[in-house]
Image (cartoon, rainbow, N blue to C red; front, side):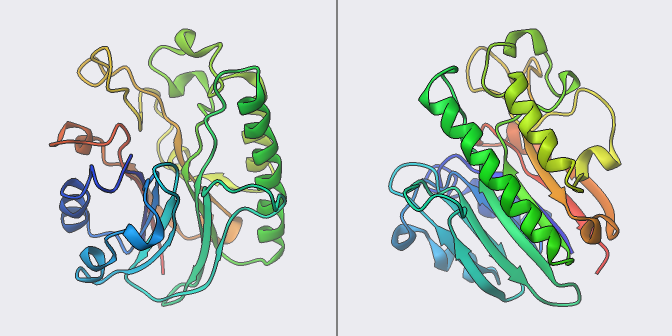
Length: 259
């Protein structure tokens, strides 16, 4: 079962690039972030015509997450538990059932800049809520995949120029520690489990020639529960997508699970 995560930075802007990648990569499941679309405005038919079931948690002009799956999606829930006042569309869960039953979580973790400040406080509070949900999912003892744009650079080797990020919310010690607390519950960073090399990135800014100079960072992650990690066959980054026509500033990250 091939599961990918992809921050598309606007479904309208990626209306051609996303289907092109889907046709070439043929993932079974895709976790999307930053769809920047309300549910009713999402182009469901475009993906249903390709054989995908579609579930969205959208928001007008900002944020928004979605799950595309070739297998039916059950028990769909929207929104990260723990704060009934949080109106930002950043979390959607569903169970995909086939040869392998997996609980899927598509997430778009807050950026947190400028830091310090209210946005950084929101980021850390959101990560604390995510940790609580991640612990609850582990208690169910089933394969869990939490994939998305985490807006966290875990280690210095996950940035081409780590010194440029030392004051950024993506790389501040508090963000990285919050990420580690989630991982240390018992989750596996799927890509790093397969590829420990530095210089492997998932995001390149549109500005200052970041893509041609490979001035990137790794902030898109797939975390696996022990039951999912035991099934991990391979993982990778579809880096070439960034060089395509009208690309997102992120690229897909994928895993292959033994079903």
